Amino acid sequence: MKAGIVGLPNVGKSTLFNCLSNAKAQSANFPFCTIEPNIGVVNVPDSRMEKLEELVKPERVQMATVDIVDIAGLVKGASKGEGLGNQFLGNIRECNAIIHVLRCFDNDNIVHVDGNVNPIRDKETIDIELQLKDLENVEKRLEKVNRAAKTGNKEAQTEKALLDRIRETLLQAKSARIVVPQNNDEEVLMEGFQLITAKPVLYVCNVDENSAVSGNKYVDQVRELVKDEDAEVIILSVGAEADITELESYEERQVFLEDMGLTEPGASVLIRAAYKLLKQQTYFTAGVKEVRAWTINIGATAPQAAGVIHTDFEKGFIRAEVIAYEDFVHYGSEAKCKEAGKFKVEGKEYVVKDGDVMHFRFNV
Image 1 (spheres, rainbow, N blue to C red):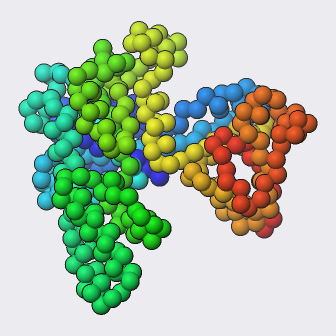
Image 2 (image 1 turned 120 degrees about the vertical axis):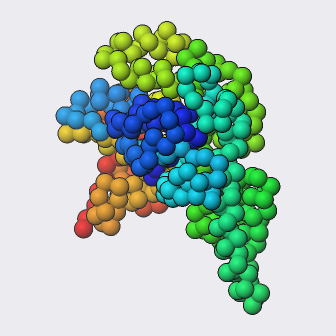
Image 3 (image 1 turned 90 degrees about the vertical axis):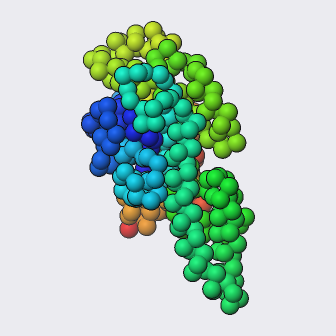
C-alpha cells in the first residue's frame, strides 16, 4: 500500500519526502526536480512499541512501515500530457492514497509557478487535471458499456448507471470519491475503475515556522474549501521539519520542537495519518527474540493477519492466541494475562483489533 505526495512544483513535496524517509530526493528551487518517483519506506511512529520493548526486553524491534512516493509536480494541462503530465498521472494511479501538499507560506525567494501564493487556486488546478483524466477514462468505458446495456445485459446496466453518476459528478468539477456506491456490486466496480479522484486524500498545508501550531489565513481558506470532503487537513512547516531532521540528538530535536510549541514532529503526525488513510492498522508479536508491529487492513481476520507473517500461517491456521494491548501493558506479561483470564483463544472468524498482541498456531 502506497501513499503518493502530490502538488504543484515548488510547494515543498520533495523536502517533505526527505523529512519522512531516509531516501534523499533531490530538492531544488525549480519545477520537475523530482522526475522519477522516489519511494521511501517509512516507520510508523507508535508509542506502544516503546512500552512493549520496555516490558519484553527483546533482542530487536521492528516497527510497522508505510510506503511514501514522491511524485513529480503537476502543472495545468497535465491531463493532456503537458509538463510531465502522463508520467505523473501514471505514477499517482499506482498509489492507494493521496497526500496533497499545498503551499501556505509567503517567501519571495521561492518561485511559485503561477506567480503568487494561492492554495485554493493550486488545489483546483490539480483537482481539475485529475478530474479531466478520470472523465476521459469514464467516457471511454461508457462507450463500451452502453452497447451491452442496450441489449439488456444486467451487469452492463449496473455499470452504466454507476458510470453515469460518476460522469455527472466529474462534469460538476467534483471528485469521484464523493460518489457513494449503493451496494456491493457497485463497490467492486468502483474499485475496478481505478479512478484517480476516487482515492482517499489528506491535505498538508505547508506553512512558515511561526504558523506551525495554529496555521494562518491560507490554512483557514483550505479548511473552508474542503469542509465537505471528509478529508483531514494537517499543518506542517516543512522547512522547520527539515531543520529538525538535521539535528544530531533526540534532546536537541525536543528543544527545537518546544521552541516551536510542538510536542512531536509534524512528520510523525502525517505518517500516522497516511497509515490511517490507507485503512491500515497494527497488531503485535512480542517475544524475547523480537517485538514487531505487523500491518494489516482494517477488518482483517485472524488467518489473514497470520498470512502477513507467512502464507503457510494462513493456509494451516488453527487458532490465534490474543491479548489486548491494554491488558498486556496492565499485567506486564503473557503469563500474568493468562492468570487474570485476559488470554483469549480465537478461531478463523475473529476480526483482529488494532493493538492486539498475537501468537498463531498452525499446521501445514
